[in-house]
Length: 560
Image 1 (cartoon, rainbow, N blue to C red):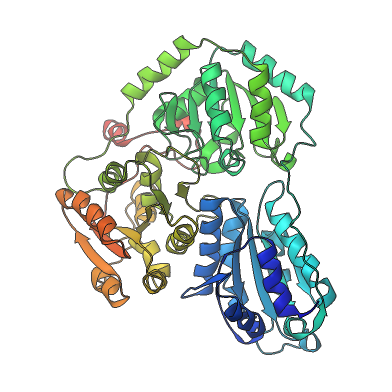
Image 2 (image 1 turned 120 degrees about the vertical axis):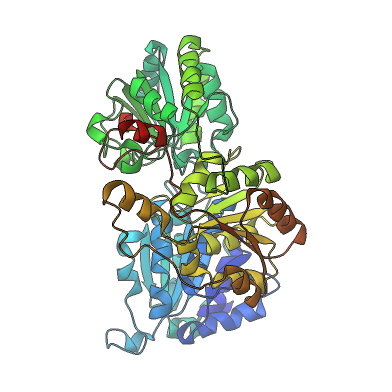
């Protein structure tokens, strides 16, 4: 049948099973929005307050559901406002398809009003970007975008469509979406056998889990693997929930703000089994001194990650779930009770600690965990609150911590929480933000309220840029250059002005009841938690130092 380009866009979205999109209209994309209006009973469009909010919402939707997130924007500034969200998704391997519209083909290259080469702009931060100037190629281009976004190591793809293409007609025929199978073409028997041999020879194995285990859905396979070889497990920020934080073998996060047990345990181990992690600098510290006593196995779907940051002794290229499935067939139960007991002693000796007097970030997170029983989807922005959430909330299942790991995007959380709630409406969704992060995209409170989303925004409000201040305190001689946020912004009044409910918390005993009230209200709620400006995240590893140099507040006091 003959359809316009705009009609083809909608039909292709329906082909791919898309039922929710996030975006903001404008002149060049009006034809597509006109078709969305006609199909509003099939595709729900969420109008965000800003295009960056739309890109973060598509990202959050994808992380929470495992599906491809979709966002729309018009040309020029509309398209460029997506860039930070696209980069965020790229760094964390999140499948997002961004559809933008551009000026007409005859106006390209003439510095026309709101013209930008957005496909060129995002080339370094997408798996693929393309512009469609021929309506006959539109359907196949959109289909290809979804296949690329989902296949192998997932990631964002951008499709830019000129306005005349959205109006022109061509023949359209329905097509079933391409089946995307787990990537195993480079998984070799000899690599699996080498890994099994190393596992058999190890007396102090440690399992290190990254975001790839979450993306591949390897939760059950990983749990079976860890208990079969009887090895402790640590994770990255992105790997949270792939292995339960309540499991007896779990030791906490690894790296700059990881637990002492994880950092010292990895330093002492004789075999590090790395599952879907890329050895980020925030995890390894000084890479040349990382796990120097251990042989290293790296399992990853992306061959480019092998030996990129840390040299390994054995690598297996392939989908993590498929690799672990094969390894589980080949290994036999191991007894590493002495090693596990040593790790348990370290857990008892080096527990996470914080000041029990007064209201603190860690206490807020512990109360959130208690009230939600660890079953909420927790979204975070970036900073101290992010680390406290990773440390003190015990994530039992994958896709329950949504956070910007690679890019570290302040302002990510609220848009992502909106996307998560749209994708998983049955779950309690909580965004934990710092006051600095909240200010960056707090206009999206209006989006949540307008859509009647039962969404909880917890602002850990210390009236400073907390993580930056922590560095200024520890490493910059208390020179607090432009990190104080001592103004008259009232987050409770702001929430009410946006159509949400605002709750202020200043005492420990108010935290639990405030969270319980927010859940019971079943609407958009902002909880303003006022904490001290000098609360810090510990443990900590100085930038560039080996992870064995991890220290906490007690160590600082002893040093002084």
